[in-house]
Length: 223
Image 1: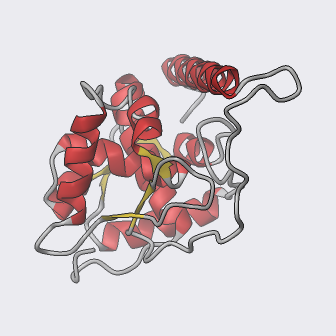
Image 2: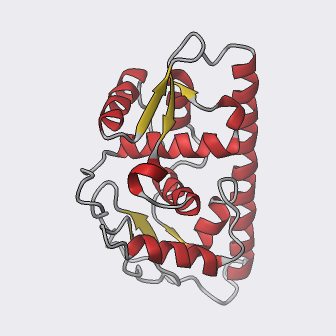
């Protein structure tokens, strides 16, 4: 991480991730009000971990992020609205910002998971493109912004994590390797297919939540 940027808290990174997500997924509601931003931080879907932050806590996070120039305030309309300034402060391209936001919202992920979960923010052509941007972020001369975690026991792929909140704590609990044979009537390939379906449904639910947020904003309920 850049030596000029101090370690951010979980809520501060969640705020940044939400601002990037809503900017790209529902631009009509962006910049966000404090109310909409708090709802995005506490969203039940597409979040890991799920938080329950108050508006006062989110406001404190915003104040600190503003002091670091990571947040920009605007007073359009009846309430204050907030936008992120990540690309300029960190000096990274929009594709990298999409990856960082996805890591801030969902925690450590494999390259394949990142490509799927990042689709609404930026559509990468393939996993090789994702890997290229991750390595650029990890090898920055001014300080790494992401790190490839050691492969967990039983895991097939390494996961990546952001470094904006410091070095992540690696879980050391061994995970049982995924069986290749049929177990209890379900094969590993079928489990993977079910997981992909669940991820797709979660993404669709997130899109519906964003649509509802946009409608509420148009009706004046989100301010």
